[in-house]
Amino acid sequence: MTTATRQEVLGLYRRIFRLARKWQAASRQMEDTIKEKQYIVNEARMLFQKNKNLTDTDLIKQCIDECTARIEIGLHYQIPYPRPIHLPPMGLIPLRGRGLRSQEKLRKLSKPVYLQSHDEGDT
Image (tube, rainbow, N blue to C red):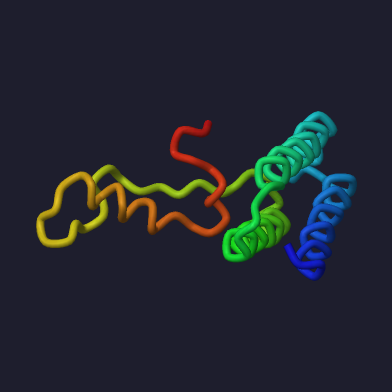
């Protein structure tokens, strides 16, 4: 990791914790605010810990883009949770009659940048 990339990552980490400290829930209820602040801190720690050993610059750039997108979406919609995507089963058009495997590939490709760190199995 270059020093510029390292500084960018550390800057994002600090930005997330500043955001968590100043976060106010959309409902303006104290218990919701506390839960959402805790979610922001836990999610940041978990994802940064998970990705701390990345060395590929393209993967690091993808993680930085995802982090930035999640921050901006959270600020815009005033929700800290990633926005879900809703695709009906078999809702994507398969390429020339290929079966379920092509549907799974299309679903993976259609996943937005802010959800790349969340697997299908996550709840």
